[in-house]
Length: 303
Image (cartoon, rainbow, N blue to C red; front, side):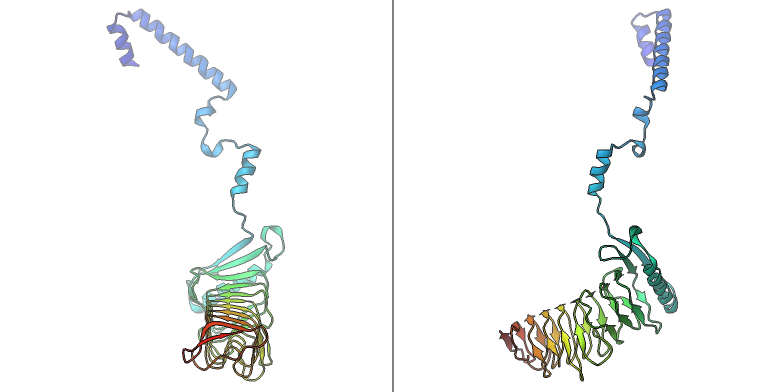
């Protein structure tokens, strides 16, 4: 302002004329402020982004862009002792059973996910997974949630990244909606029901590793193995050695007498599967083997 006044004086404007101009400017600003205050127009330039209004139509359009997540999440940090870690996990599971996500009962599209940090939770306890629609997922997705044992009896459950090490990973019979991914159970009779009186291994298994007689293997009573298995590894007599193998197996590896070859029946589909020892059972009915290798690296294509 001072520079402008000096300029006016330099071009011959008198001090009286400058004073008159200043008075007029002050009066104009006063009128502007008065009108702005009366009409709240001052908020035009000063309203923060957070306080700017959004129309109903705009809010609806924005809401349509936001993903709807049909689940609530609990987190297990696992930073204590082994006993403390398991107690934290057990408490989270107990809490999940009581939850009603979005005010509704647990259901296929209204789940609770327990995200578990990598760590040792193997204090000697067996985790009983007995409630549907509660998923247990490793924070990293890898098999780094170490348990002493697990017993899965709930059907519609997703398990990812759980390992029982050399202990048994037990699942109840006929859990056709169960999904296990990146899970390990090297104990004998893993990934099947604990009782040795037969049963059905269904559901979906991806990148899972079992020990001998896993995935429906048995040395006494035959199982029906009807699930979907992708990139899974079993030991001796795995994948229904004595039973009826009716599922679909892609890029899976079994030990000797696997895939129904211990007096079992192979009516399922095997694609790019391999035996570490022995040969494949002869297929029956609609059974197929495609691009499979037996224990002698002999190509096997049947059906």
